[in-house]
Image (cartoon, one colour):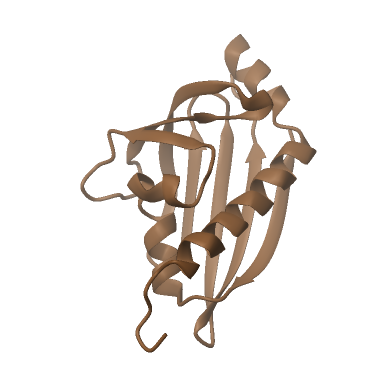
Length: 150
């Protein structure tokens, strides 16, 4: 199935970028397609799940369950939609006070008609735009953050 990988340097400390990426309750601060998050555990860890209401391909609104598949503090987080197989995989590296960020968005085949149909709508073009918008959204959310000495 389709995937898209993109890299960017974000002008913010890795701890600030990580705070946004690793807290599903804050996704709407940087992801314009996130409308609501429910069921976020007090402590997000590998295996945690939560529900996301958002807009996907074709601007279709829906609510699906996401699960945390990989989590390494200040380094890596991978989330997967349990319906469509859509995933977002983020890798962070500290870069002299900034954060080198690599994001991969994609869809892996899942069983069931709904999963196959939803997965088919996640084209390379859609994933590329979603990656660019996510990185831009992170930058925008972090620009509004108050930083010591800044």
